[in-house]
Image 1 (cartoon, rainbow, N blue to C red):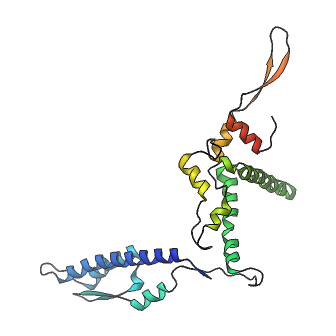
Image 2 (spheres, rainbow, N blue to C red; image 1 turned 120 degrees about the vertical axis):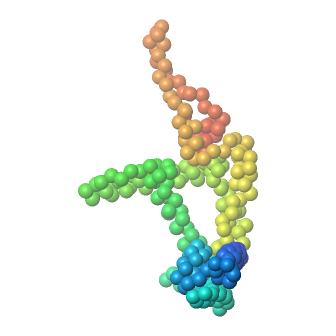
Image 3 (tube, one colour; image 1 turned 135 degrees about the vertical axis):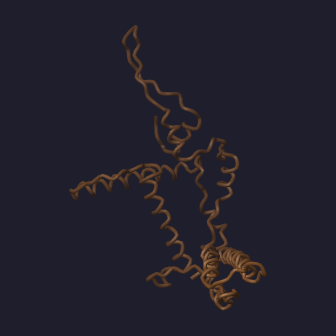
Length: 256
């Protein structure tokens, strides 16, 4: 169990804002029941007005509401609020692994690493690979299909890892991790990643792109077969590459 002070402060701020907003709307109803001309009356009518307010801000559990035929009052349930505040910022992950094998920080880091698995599925289905459902009935074909999907993502993962320098992705995650105040604190980007965000350039001066845009850039490279009309001789000719394309191919260790 860990406590995130940033999350705790944000929760305190949000709860107090919701309590104040609820009280502001409830006070309008109180004044409506006390006005001299055409006062709001009837338990049903008052209850409907109160229900809309507490339903909007979801703070009913923190208020004691008293409705009669001709009046309405409310007070904060301080004990309920204090009990909830005691849990602000707490981060609980339960595991069967003993504390001698993994410390609390390692358990949280391992749990958070599940986000990588979720990104992988999103990448395969929607973002990059666009793998569509194929209905196989043969076990060998099912295994082959899953293998090809994972193989495609494996290739992409290594490409992203090697091309981190010219992508908007953080290529200095160790530095970013070291700058976090705690394992449950929000993730931060490294200084080099923030510099790329601000300038749109890598440390080498080359333009930074998303992975998808970089693939489109590389797709402009092509190999042509040229034939001379005079002699009929043929020879291959490559599209002239840019400095960025040449650097990308070097990072991927691809010979052209």
